[in-house]
Image (tube, rainbow over all chains, first blue to last red):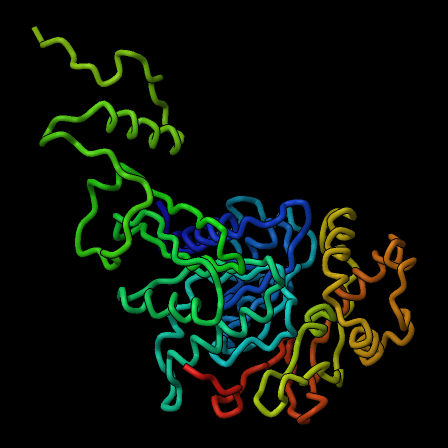
Length: 282
Length: 135
């Protein structure tokens, strides 16, 4: 069974992997990537495993100290947890990352068009709160997005995963991004699961580009509870519906089998007998 | 902080008016890594070729000499050099393996100082120093 710290690490890794997938990078060469709100360097480590060079910023000096230990390969208490995958053993090389103490709301301190891409994991929502009397969230958001627009190379993308507390926050964030000229929007994975739901702000310079699809999982539909924060957003796929209570349609069954296959479970092949009513029991 | 990162850094405060680059390096402690950072030579070469267009060459040469690498880099980038793979490997080393551990970065326009401690530059600005925003 996971303990809570290694479960958190696992989730953050998954989110980072998904963000990198959404970036749709040129896989033929390492990219130069900005990691905003890099925290303890977990997302940076994932970027390294994908073979990229990165620069991470964070407003917390303490988190950066932890990240620095990871970068300079000094022994840490939770190094044992990461050893599960033998990743630490494989990597004899020094890190491809660099760290910086910086508050994203003050505008990114880089020359124009320096980074191929940008990711941010679980950090963006902090811009919605004022930390001091003279800070206005909307101002900080616009300043941040405006500077992000400048420091990304043309054709580059940014994927920022965040946790909106309310629908208004999600709207404010995407409006500020649009205001500075970015194309794109929010991609939601697992919109019907309170636990698994994740928001990714996917930004680019090309308004003609099609937005990537959010992930859905039909089996999660049954467990969804509570109020959906983003009631305006519809799930990308039309999910098949049960005809009436207790009766499953063929479409629903095939969709569910497909989902199970995707999760790697063993599923019987689809034949002409699939979803057919079974003969009555003797 | 490696030379690659330094080449991208600028003072983004209002006073610098977009000219806060390059930051002057006053180095008190430096570290040079000898081990390879990206495992494959091909990866290193493709990375360097990819970022070559982005680098500010004169700023890089100046920064390298401020870090004690007096003649590590040629003063100008020529077409022949760009095609020379040995040159690109040496450039990769200079960009990726030379780290400023402790020192100060100074803005050429305003004189504002950004300390570097333990390899981490402190680029924190106060709200008043930031560029104005219209919302």
